[in-house]
Image 1 (cartoon, one colour):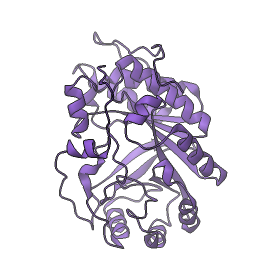
Image 2 (cartoon, helix red, strand yellow; image 1 turned 120 degrees about the vertical axis):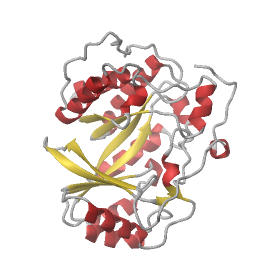
Image 3 (cartoon, one colour; image 1 turned 135 degrees about the horizontal axis):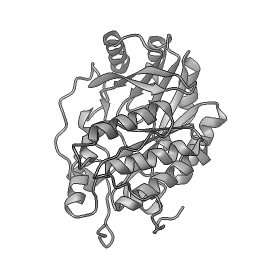
Image 4 (tube, helix red, strand yellow; image 1 turned 180 degrees about the horizontal axis):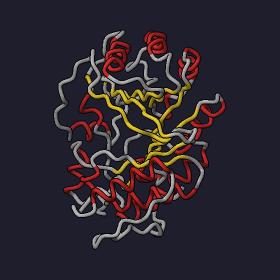
Length: 328
């Protein structure tokens, strides 16, 4: 990919290249749904996901588009429990819940600790609750919330990539050591964690994207992560669109997502999932898109490598790209 001399992708640059936010209601989540997931027990079960309407994340990462459904200021005290209660009334009964708030659950400017007890009461009938958080915000607040809960608490952390130069350009404001320390803290206190891993972030070729996603899975499991989710990077947030125009970003191919998912599952070190949202963005062939999507879903649920899809477009991205800069 093209290299600028010394580009700086900081908050100011990222914010300057954004579009408009969507109109959201601080008393209602902006989305909610049910998905199936293979749980730690090996069962395939329904998991409810509530996308909470919340204050914009304090960290403005280069690849993030979650800001589109956020507020500029903190939502009023009690709004988050109200959103959860409202969504649970719309959803069928489930045992597992993901609370995603477009940022960090343990950022007090997003979710005040005064709301923890009401949230815990609303989800007391569940078996598992999963929240997301920036590794730098993992601390005793996690333990305080866990101690209020009846369901098991799990926390999703953004690792993104172990390519250190790319990680620094993402404006994540985190090092690999920060990530490892966060996972170690959670493991010490018996809280399971999962990692979000990017497939082909900016400044990586297709082959490099596959290679570094696989290395990121290795690092996540060696750090003590229980589960990894691979997220193919897409444009649409302003910053990535500009980088795409400059030749510094391109979305990955769906075949590369298959390759990385196969690699992760083949390690047999923990569950590995591929994000399946809008996979058509990553396909150049209408003939096999449905088959490839179904194959990825099957592997997500079975945690076994499924038969390859046979198609004339079926080039698979190599996982043997040579190492470049940014070694871990």
